[in-house]
Image 1 (cartoon, rainbow, N blue to C red):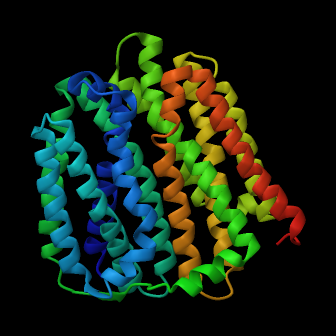
Image 2 (image 1 turned 180 degrees about the vertical axis):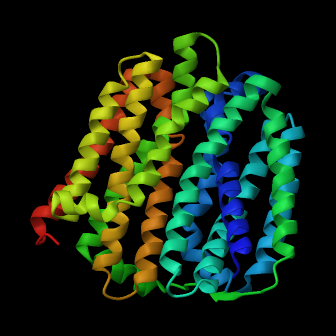
Length: 382
């Protein structure tokens, strides 16, 4: 794979993350324009995230051997067309179904891109190429949120989605020009393998921990636009989009993972620190001021990405066999937590307010901390 093709893959990765998260900061706009509840507005994110929770289990069976180039061309064509249709629609029913359809495509796209990069890169470059891929997913997640809010202020929400749709079609054209057509074998986990992985206590503790953390993380990211609207009595897409700036700190953390673990001596200690930072940030969110909440979000993201990055590395380090399945289950628990966290806490938020909402998230995050403390004292530190 030449350098140009690698850059195209990174462009496609960032674009896919834009699609996934672009609706998140403009929930209040959908609430008013479509006449829907806040929980219904957050389902635009939930409907896309849910398939990611099951992709690692089922996609291996669906995509046994695939020419990744053909897969990506078709997926980006469908994403582009559906994104443009979404931007022109005014029906909540059809818009939600379009997002659900796109959610079925996103896991195939991300799996295909990562497989393409890892298969086509040399052994010397594959680690740095995948590291850059992870960084691009984080940057893409921020840019999708920020520009969605920014363009909504300037031109209304539809313009940004039309632009993204056109860029998705451009991505399909660029991939069509690729010279190579690579196939990759997708993991096909058997039920007995999954049960075996879950019976390993340190795996189960980590999975339960990351479920709770990403549940809490997505809960805040999905509902903070509504709380900012309550504070200012009017919606500002630019201010809301900027609130997600802390997301970019994940890039710095992911590239300094070894140093972070070295500071705390063990992976468990680093995860515990990350969750404690996470919990402190949750309490800062109680001070309802944009500036204070912006600082809280920076701290919140630092805690999240330390816990997530170290936990992911810990799973890889501890996996003696079935490493692919161990990683796949980690991703499944991660996105299952995110999918549920993106809408379930909304019922508490609507009925009891921001304070009760934060209390619920604090309790769930504290249970994640308990999981790691149990792991720390149940097993010799590594």
